[in-house]
Image 1 (cartoon, rainbow, N blue to C red):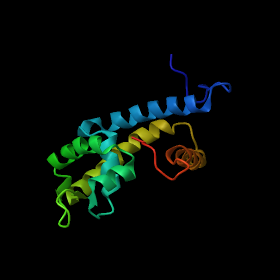
Image 2: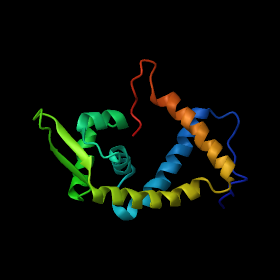
Image 3: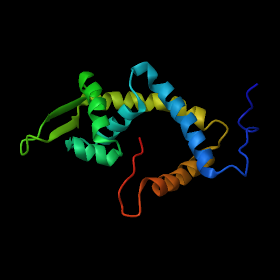
Image 4: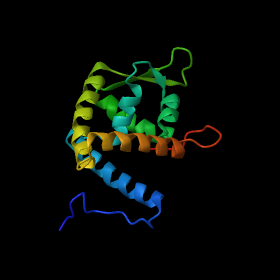
Length: 159
């Protein structure tokens, strides 16, 4: 029998990194499940979100800003280009550079994905008050900053 959120507990002696990793994995599965009807993955969501400001970026810039290896980004972009959400073209100043930008259809898809993500967020925050959820978001922001930036200022891979 599944325990209710109020009775499920985390042992005080469990390493916090393990607890966060376990919760993060479960939350990522919920998020992935929420997006599954679209055929897109959370990494696609991250790319669309990373491009939503509208400026064309080089694939290298985008990979670095998202913490996604450039070699992995190419395949993810291929899917988004096939769906007509993203445009990829040669840079006018350097033929070796590929520029990517979000198309209007990609902006619309991102809004749909954000709505779908709300389903997983409701699952993740069940049993929390609005204040609890806001505090959790604040604390996770601090933890995220702690683990995604190395002392030399280089971002680590987050996806």
